[in-house]
Image (cartoon, rainbow, N blue to C red):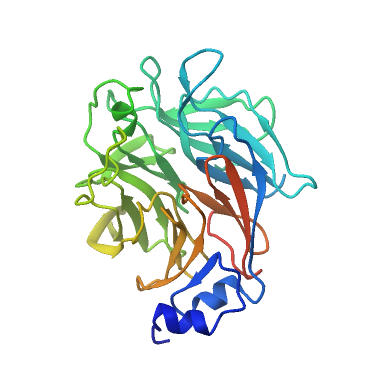
Length: 340
């Protein structure tokens, strides 16, 4: 379908809520005939809803990690994990006793959550497998690259072959919660069956979100170097999603044909998710931006102050994190993500 201008498409969709901004008529197939956006949970005491957004379908629950903040009791910088019962009337939440050191991104795995843990000054970061049920037992899966500690693992995705692909920027060092980096800003692949870990992509300022296409022939990785990590920004640095072809050589995957996939107009593309048709979604400065497989901006789910991450639920639901709020968007009931 030919791309239409924003104004032309908006004129054809004036019945839609203002939170849904149409840039291409194909977005109408994604949001359906009755899209809706509502706040389902709010907590202004601290930024509880920042990252991860791991949806567990068996319990209709959502695990989210907070932004870094100073605990009023301990006076220490901390990140807490909250479990949210998203479809229970009313929506409820509880802070869980997580032992994950500074958790950030996460993904469904083995009935629980595979966390990307940034680590602290005294604890190594890495990938941790955590149970989705109390007492939320966790176990370190991998924490170093042949003896060199990872910087501060940011996000992780699980491939169909069981391997873990994850990004490792130096954000935690810039925030003063990790020692001086021992590795470049890179992307890794870890095979839990062989324990092999290797660099799968480099050349990033700050590698961040990562996601596969439905057929896993393409991987999308965002570079969010526009945000340095110490509170400063440099608008000349990347705020870009790159696409790579996954090529098999001698039985092992390599990333080839690096290319710019998309760049949002507002903020950085943080968390990345892909739906069943291959459309790419990213948490950006103005909300969730959605692009076609060909990199055409289809539309946006507008959220004031943007979002770092989000996740798909059942029946076209999407849960959007907004620091002190969690939104639920109702899209076309046929829309679903590729992570569960």
